[in-house]
Amino acid sequence: MEAILYICHGSRVNEAAAQAVNFIKECMKRQSNIIQEYCFLELASPTIEDAYATCVQRGATKIIAIPVLLLTAAHAKHDIPDVLHKMKNLFPEVELKYGRPIGVSEKMVDILEERLLETKRKITDQSLILLVGRGSSDPDVKKDLSHIADLLQIRMPNTTVKDCYLTAATPSFEDALIQVESYPVNQIFIIPYLLFTGLLMQSMEKAIGEIQRTSEQEFVLCHYLGYHPKIEKVIGERIQELSGESAYVSNYA
Image 1 (tube, rainbow, N blue to C red):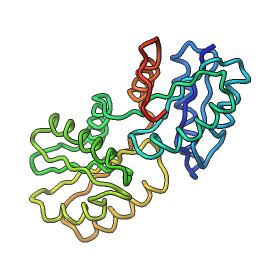
Image 2 (image 1 turned 135 degrees about the vertical axis):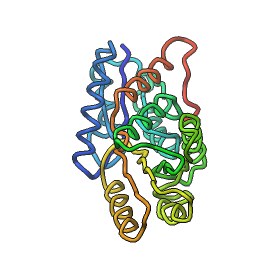
Image 3 (image 1 turned 90 degrees about the horizontal axis):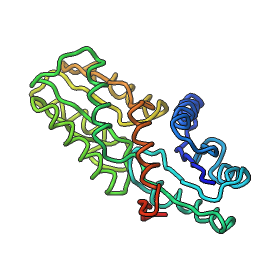
């Protein structure tokens, strides 16, 4: 029997963990698999180990593990596979397939457009869009987010789209805020490329508030991505990739 194991990041913020659980429960409704479990890599429960064991106890002979992560970085390449390898050794009779994170998708660009429209402000050639990622020392994170920024730029040809990062990559969000003051624009839209609320959103709000006090430019903070229905569709696609004999299997599994 085939089980689906949804692996979320986890957060110290209870609201963020609750948002993840509610989203996964919606994803589960779209799949016919009887055995479906969710878990967290860190900072919340159940753990990957616990949820994997639950799948086996419920009768799984094959587990499809889906990392519910925005981009491919150390968590998707190393941290999650390390735990899955340990569980595979504990239950060698159970087949394991490990899928891709959400990654680059036109559906994600659709959500970015929606977040901009929600502000009810007109985007002009005097506007600039900052796409703000969590960041990582892994170069694939910057490559993928830059690609997403390029796709958004194609849809917004009359303005400029730039990417920046909250941690471990350049340009930093703080540096980007300083740099845009020298640009000939009067309005900066800031889109947090984050799945959930939390400490990073709080730090962004604080930084924007500080720079807005002395700047003549308007800084517009958009809503974070959230667990959007289109992300649910991408998760469904990642599950489908692992179906059949010619299924895609992540190189990191």
